[in-house]
Amino acid sequence: MLKFKRTKLIPGVDRQLLIKDAVRQMPDLTRRRFITGGASLGALTLLTGCDVSDSASAETLLAKISKFNDAVQAAIFNPNTLAPTFAESAITRPFPFNAYYGLDDAPNIDAKDWKLEVRGLVENKKPWTLEELYQLPQEKQITRHVCVEGWSAIGSWTGTPLRHFLKLVGADTRAKYCWFQCADMDGYNSPLDMETALHPQTIMAFKFDDKILPRAYGFPMKIRVPTKLGFKNPKYVVSMEVTNDYKGGYWEDQGYNSFSGS
Image (tube, rainbow, N blue to C red; front, side, top):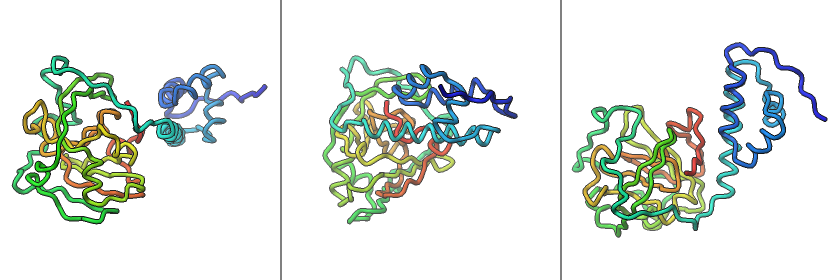
């Protein structure tokens, strides 16, 4: 039977909170096995290869758990499975504003000056005006937004399937990511794995509740991804890049899972 030496008190690290944080980031099967086998710092060290001795090494351990979780979620993601849809009567009104800043600080974009920049592994890199995007075929969906903070709300979104736009610009859909940059303060950005970008319910949303997308919900364009947690639905998008390089993201760089399926 494996034995772990007793870990001394770690400066700047609460041992029990560290274990709880690590368990929360594990896929279900790994979580069950870890708890059944005895959740301890010694077991975490064996699982990740990280010798936790201070706050910095604790962060490294959690990052390794997070990346492992990403890989498992990506492996089991079924691009043909649809998120649930709802009736008009189920729409949450008022739909909550969701950001790491107040509504008064949300980007206030002039539609006449805005263009969507297209970069990376695409044949046609021409920028798109809002009027040009409005001319593309659009679909409506009523789906649930699931926030990483634990709440959810149902909204109505209308826009162009992202996979249609990717085909239109000649994107290399063998690439790993679509990376979005936004007009938010602090330069919000987020990567989307290509399988999710090609999912039939992933859309470039231009309307909310049958009206032009309000400032609160991401005008002029939001990437609506009902198979992902809310922070993977970037708003106020100004550019899209098709790439094989993992460029990180606003929340991903702070330790959140990049895959983050809902």
